[in-house]
Image (cartoon, rainbow, N blue to C red; front, side):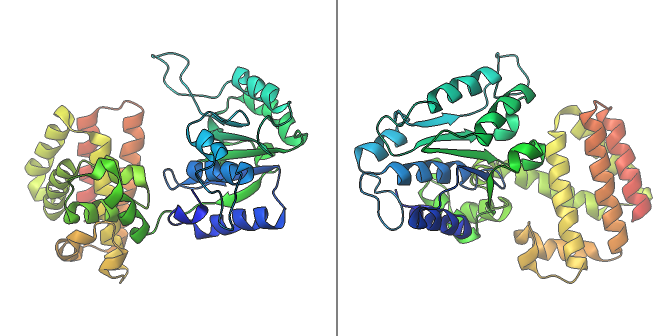
Length: 336
């Protein structure tokens, strides 16, 4: 499947296509950017283009035996490494040194079928320290006819020594038109109405997985409750505000609710700055957000946002949910 079928990411496609065309493929690349915007898929297309039996001007043919084997994960010269959990009870997935050593052993041989051996390490920031140090040796002295592609959504969690030895390729959030096209043809979006697809696109932050994972009905309920909450911020309505805190503490998805609250406050600040509805994350609520900016200074809204950030932080440290939310709302009333 040629690069042109990957929607969005024009800059990344241009960099990779020119490198192949000019014969200037680097030995190692770092693909970095938001989650679920096409980094891993682009890496696999790069591997296909380098090993395709009938490559075209815009990438691999997608139908030759080499391309089909890569699609099926069966090509002997293309390796995909991803974080795994050590056990079902492990908290975080990681890439361990044993996996890196096994990969190094495979890269030590000459290509078996293709022109290049290609190793794609997805979630490269999940390499543990021992794995990073072992992989650094491969980056410093890469085997011949080998391409290494590190994929990450959090480059700042990686060792600087790894980053410095790779050519960086930045990926951006997908534009709305690209995301809309993906959702319209995605199997998980079968049966979605146009209005729901549009809402998912608006709220996705340019990420496919985020757009597909949204529970639209739940989000609509949260937003209704939060709009009512923001409209009643007053020390004279503490009974209503504290009732909301009790209900959320009893069984709400607190972090998700606070994320929604932060998004609404962000949109209020954007409107106060004089921006139009096109700049809002909750664009469909523009007519209802505008009246809420009345009587609140921009400094007050920013103070509320800061209170939400602090509340999310202390809740991650297992603070009491109800008390934390009540304290946040007291700060809201003081700011308002």
